[in-house]
Structures are given as C-alpha cells and as structure tokens.
Image (tube, rainbow, N blue to C red):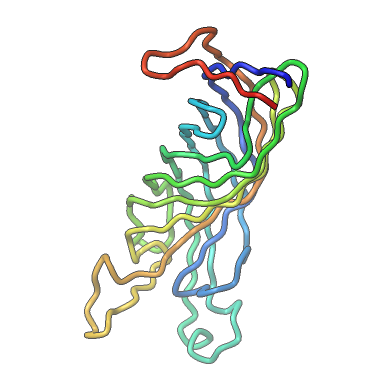
Length: 213
C-alpha cells in the first residue's frame, strides 16, 4: 500500500462557457439562446472530499417570446437582454479522494451548493434588480500534476426575483410576490485552476490525514 498525506491547499483559476435563462419566456428549454460567460474561481480544499468555493462569473441572459410558437407568446412579444455579475460562496463535495500528489493524477465528479448574489449590470426591461440566488450543480475535475487542474461544470441559479425577464408571474390570487416566481439562470463551461498555496502542516482543528490506496 502507498501512503499519501493530504495537505489543505488553495487553487485559483478562470472559467469560460455559456449562460442561459429559464423563466416566463422560456419555461423549460435547456441551453436556450446561450450567451458568453467568463469568470474567476477560488477553491480551498480542506480535505480530500470537502472544498470551500468562491466564484465570480459574468453572465449574458436573453429571451424573446417570438422564439416560441405558442399563440399567447406570439401575441405578447416580450423580450429582454440582461448582463449580470454572479457571485457565490459555498461548499463542494468530491465523490472520490482528490489528493494532490506528485506521482499520481487525481480526478473526481463532484456536486456543489452555495449562497449567492447577482448584480445587474444592464437590462432593457427597466425592472431587473440585484437579487439573492441559491446556486447548485455538478461537475468533474482532473488534476494533471501538483499545480494544474481542469474541470467542467453545469450549475443552476434559483433567483429570488420575478423581474429578471421583465415578465411578472402572478400567484393563484392574481397578486405578485417574491415567493411566486420562476426566473432561473444557468452556467455551463470549463475551467482551469492553479495551486497557489499549500499548507505543509495541519491547520488548527484540522488533522493531517494519511490516505492509503
């Protein structure tokens, strides 16, 4: 058996991909009218399975009723274009041990969940405002060596506004409320990270771990 010692470490990187919208104009079509998305991410690996993540992504979101064939949307003819900065802090769980080791590569699928906030940079609706989000999603990452890793990720953002697309969705009684909305947006893309810091000793409260394969 080969023993491997895990050291808490920090990775920083960049993301590139697409962003897209789901809501009153586009109720269910995934990857509808995708816009360019870029961003930066920071990950701190506490253990081989648990990671703290901080992301800052730029999103372009679009929607147009005329892209859909149903009669109601053709008559409504609503459209929007929005640019936003999406930031979040959250937790990532690796299904396989993710250990930086000079003699082996490492790879694992993972899931993540977070708390976030979206800052609206521009919008033609006159309604879109900054708002809280709940990000979650799945990904896969592969480490080439002690320093460089790549990954792919698909994540959703549950919003707490019904004004992202400029179309309000009334509740059963005809009124509008923050709890009754269906505006979401999503990111999908690839990223590359670089190890920028590694502790050679155990952090206070976190024991150095030896993993046996």
